[in-house]
Amino acid sequence: MTDLGAMYIGAGLAAIGIGLAALGVGNVFGSFLEGALRNPSAADGQQGRLFIGFAASELLGLIAFVVAILILFVVK
Amino acid sequence: MAGDINPMEQFEVGKLINFQLFGHDVSFTNSALFMVVVFALLALFMAGGLKRQLIPGRWQVAAEGAVSFIDSMVNVSIGKGGKKFAPYIFSLFFFILFANLVGVLPLAIVPGLHTFAVTSHITVTAVLAFFSFAIVLVVGFWKHGFKFFSLFVPHGAPMVLLPVIVPVELISFLVRPFSLGLRLFVAMTAGHILLEVFGSFVVQGLNAGGPLGWLVSLLSFLMIVGVSALELLVCAIQAYVFALLTSLYLHDAVHLH
Image 1 (spheres, one colour):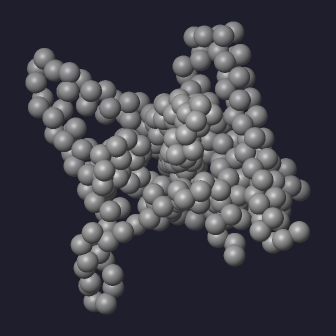
Image 2 (image 1 turned 180 degrees about the horizontal axis):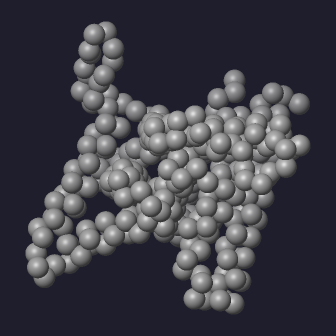
């Protein structure tokens, strides 16, 4: 296998993490909606926590993206 | 591979006016130009809303809504003693929001005009994040002195676990400025790369011609429209998250838990 081929495979493997972060973000919003539909009057007070959870799980996907970009464009 | 179109080209910083100061390169770049544009838009928005009419017009209602939005976020997140940080959170939120929105303006339709997303560079977002972190440190040590270190010791943690918990808390505290800056920078960069890649599909599909090429172009164009709408949402969410996390960190500094 050439180095270039290995690089592309590595970047593709790093992209798996982005899909897993998508599961996490979906879980955050899905659980919020589930709780919000059960008790809509309490939902507005929890929006800050919703976005904190979103930010925390999204960050890991973004880091996976950074790794893919580093492999593609920075590693020589 | 996106063919001839390099998706990273849009992030290049170019000199507009060459300028040297004591042997350092302090040229006026396109990044600086768009920061000035963002500042001018923000100043215009606030100046138009500060007329203090008894019966507010639409513009004043918009500006008051912006101020009260930040005010309520600061009240909820920082709580008592958070009022004096509201101007900083306000500047942070609206600078990031306006920079993000100016960055996705489709002005590249006009040849030669090309918007530059200021927040898609880690040099900019890291400075904002380090500012937030520095304010947290200064406020924390100013108010609590060395008691500020009790931030790393959670209430009610058993003594046996402390050698594990304290280093973990310390690392999670020290990582904050990096995660804060990295999140905004990567979210904006990723969105712009995505748009550029679909844009290159449109061009290449039209170049290839034939029904299949046109179909690819059409589908990619529809995708660009959808992704642009998503980008607008991401712009607002990232600005909100940055301001929210900064105010939460300030809550730690002011109240120590």
